[in-house]
Every structure is written in structure tokens, then in C-alpha cells.
Length: 486
Image 1 (cartoon, rainbow, N blue to C red):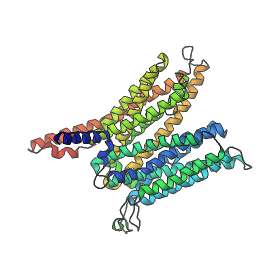
Image 2 (cartoon, rainbow, N blue to C red):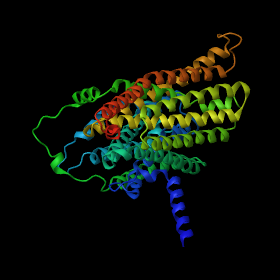
Image 3 (spheres, helix red, strand yellow):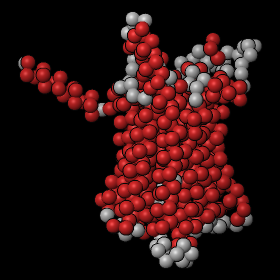
Image 4 (cartoon, rainbow, N blue to C red):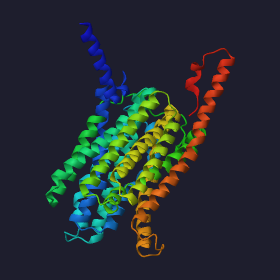
């Protein structure tokens, strides 16, 4: 019996180790409730795959839409990204007679996302010219559909993360964020496989069914996700005559509460550095290393899997009390190593070195994204969590989107100059365009380290000063551990 008991105890330890999200649960947010809440990330991942993957390919190949116009449509959702800060602020201060702050905004975002998906397939058919309508009507309808889907996704993600933060204890928020991030990636992977299987034998009718099926599934998943998640509290949210600060005043107050300019600048530059290669890794593998389509697709999955591991590692380290800015700096350093590997993999045609570089980039991006988000959450006052999440999301999404567009354009420009001989005899290979972008990303990551570094030093100095003060007063330094600034 004693041997069996020891085996059970060891198995339970292994089980907890293999289930890293188990530490994200609490008495107020058990695993079943957390998994149900994470369904909003599944729906957002599904919409993301439609926008940047399935519809991107279908519009260019099957519907013969010009690639430049497709790129413009895919970039349109970024127009709404800066408004995430305002959405987070509104959800912090929303006054409802029903006593809800987050749920109304989450459902508003869901409705907008559903509406955009519902009209999108018909807009694309008009855009393809397969109707009697004028071409500009299809362009306008598709632009509105893409913009609505993007607006709904940004609203749902900002408010959903704020709701998850409301429901979880502060010390467990890093694990909650890691799980929600991983669930979005899971939704993207599952959706890509399902959409690819359904549309393998393409027809316009199947396209309509897939996109509108995704619209209906978005409503169902988000409704299940928010059902009975936020407690009603009319006394907290009832309308009163008391003065309440507006958005700009609240944002200025948030900025005065710490080094927010530096914190957001680091998050923006780092996000741009990691995102600039998003549309270049697979073409690099195919054009430079002669990898088949299946091989480059596997590498994209490897990038996503490494990012999930980065999320988990960051959550574990943050749960152990590590400084979030230090973890973000580690993520930037992993990115520098990864991009260096990719640069050298081309001239020596080493596929395994390329795969290792992709893994380092994904892992570093996971560390960096999770750490910067957690740093903003931890530094925000409890009544401004939504605003802090919105500001981080606005900076991260806007910088990443601009970087993706810039990286693709810069690669095309430098490649054209190289192949034409304008850069000299030693720089005529198409790989020059890719390497130029990767070098800029390495430079941006070094700049990120310079921006984030003082935040780490400040946290360490604060902790040392408090410990010395505690020691001189004859008190335990552990009692002051929670007061070190981030």
C-alpha cells in the first residue's frame, strides 16, 4: 500500500508538471471556468486565420483579386488597433443598470465581428467581378467587412483579457495570460486545418459556407465564454453624479504612475522587431533554401509551437517572482540569436540551422510578448487594468502591423535593386533583401534592450534599497518584497 501511495504522489507531481496551466486556476477561477472563458480567444484565432491566411490566399488565387488590394484589405483591421486603449478605459468605467462593466463591451465586439464575417463572402464575390455590380462597390463592401472583423476582434480581446484579470488573483495573472495566449494559437491551428480541408475542393458556395459558419461559431463560442462570468454589481456601476475623469485625464494619470513611456516604447519596438519577418520566413525558406511548401508550412507551425513554449516559460518564471522586464530582455536576446542563425543559414544552405533560428525567434517572441503584457498589468492600478491592457494592445498591434508592411516593402525594394545590379556585383542575389530586413530586426532588438534595461535596473535598485532599509530597522526583507517597483 505504501508503494502505491508513493507512486500516486509521484504521478500527481508529474501531472502538475505536464499541465502548466494548472497553476492559473484559483478558488474564484477554477479550470473549467477558465477554459470556458478562453473560448473568446478561440474565436479570435479563427477570425485571424480567415483574414491573414484562408481569405488572403483565396482572394489572390481563386478570385483573381490584385495582391496589392488584398494586402490593403488585410491591413485594414490595424486601423482600429489604436482604439484598444479607449475600449479598455470604457470597460473600466462603464455604467450599467445591470451591474456589468466588461460583458456589454465584449458582446458589442462579438456582434461587430459577427456582422463583418456575415457580409464578407458576398463582398468578396462582388470584389472578384463575378457580378453585375461596379468594382468600387465590392472594394467598399470588402473594406467595411474587414474593418468590422478587425474592430470586433480588438474589442473582444481587450475586454476579454480585462475580464480574466478581474477574475484571477494578482499572483496568478501571468499564468492566466499565458493560457489565453496559447488558446488563441490553438484556435488558429485548428481553424487552419479545418478551413484547409473544407476548401481543398474550392467553390464559391463552400467559401460562403465557411465564412458564415465561422460567423455563427463566433457568436456561440463568445456567448458560452461570457455566460455568468462577470458578477452583477449595480451598486458599483449605477450612475452617480460624482465627477469621473475622462480618457485623456485617466491616461495621463496612468503615465504618471510609473515609467510608462519607456515601458510602452520597449513593447512597441520589440513587437516591431519580432513581427517584421512574419511574411518573410516562409518565402526565405522556399527561395533561399529551396524548401517545398510543406516544409515551410511545418516551420510556421514550429514558430507557433516555440511561441507557446515561450509563453509557458515566461509564466513559470513570473510566477516564481522574476522581474517581467528581465524576461522581456531575455526574449529580445533569444530573438537576436535566432535572426543571426537565419542569416547564416542561407549562405551555407543549412536547413537545420534555419529551423533552429525559427525556434529561437518563436521562443523569444513568446517570452517578450507575455512579459511586456504582464509588466503593464502588474504596474497598473486595479481600477485601470482595462486601460493598461488596451494601451499595451494598441501599441503592440499597431507597431507589429506597420513593421510587417515595412518589412515586406523593404525586402521587395532591396531585392529589386540587388537583382538589377544597382548595389554592386557582390550584392546581386535575392537573399540580400531578406538579410537586410533581418539585420534591421536585430538592430531593433538591441534598441529594445537599451530601452528595457533601465526598467530592470530600477527594479533591482529599488529592491536593494528596501532590503537595506528593512535590515537597518531589524525587519525581514521578505516583508518588503512586494513593494519593489517594476
